[in-house]
Length: 140
Image 1 (cartoon, helix red, strand yellow):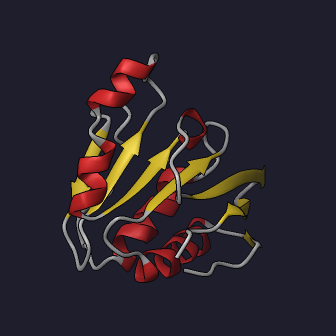
Image 2: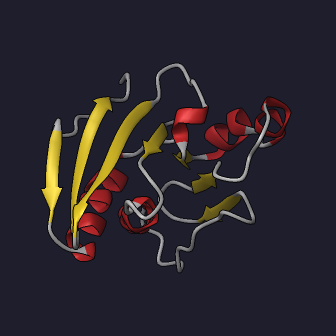
Image 3: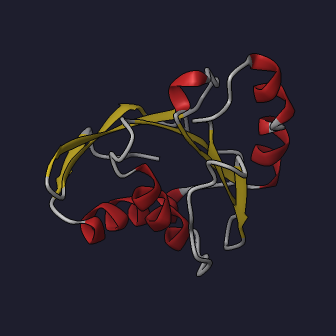
């Protein structure tokens, strides 16, 4: 999967569209780690990723649920680590099992190190502008 090194979006719709383009290329087993401050637009981006995988489910932040699954061409597991406090909670998520069932996108992904995972950073530039930077692309 190849993504551009960086992209600036000017609206939530553009941020979703950037996510959709990524989602269209995701394959089963892919893991994408998203980083960015609170309110940076990570969930908005994932809304587009889900649409790109063929899901028409309503995407919401899984902050209190930790994992939400969205069916599509590739099942998408949307993981949010904001409230995860220790490594045993990370192990309990079953990330490897989720990746075996489809693709996984992780908000607050800086709390994980996953071999072969893509790493994207979303930076809030003010108003509705976001900078989406590819730090590490998927290994395939």
